[in-house]
Length: 151
Image (cartoon, rainbow, N blue to C red; front, side, top):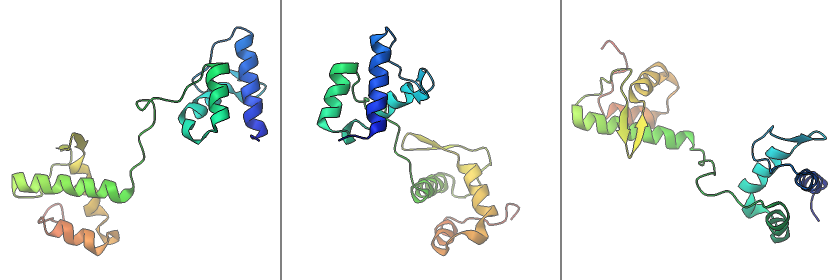
């Protein structure tokens, strides 16, 4: 058994299509009886793997809805630790090339095909140095980090 809200949204979408309406894909595109059909369709497409086989069959064969392609799926969020590691890699790359870590605030470093706003990150690490974990301070110290911008 499926949730009543799923059944209701499915029914309202089918009625909308039967009345000659187009399949809504964007949130806010079609709202019927307070139900945002565009948001519901998008949610079904993005959560395709979590739906039951029967739900997928109904969506595909009754409404013409299919699962979202890989390009349509949002990228997974990166953790703060992953972001910090990426910025540290950018700092190491900059230090290796320039032999210092006096990075201009507007500098952007390219690491693995991604642009990393290294200058702003270095400035933020300086201003937040009292809150940084000892291992992070040690990693930046190893690159010759100057904790005072004027030093």
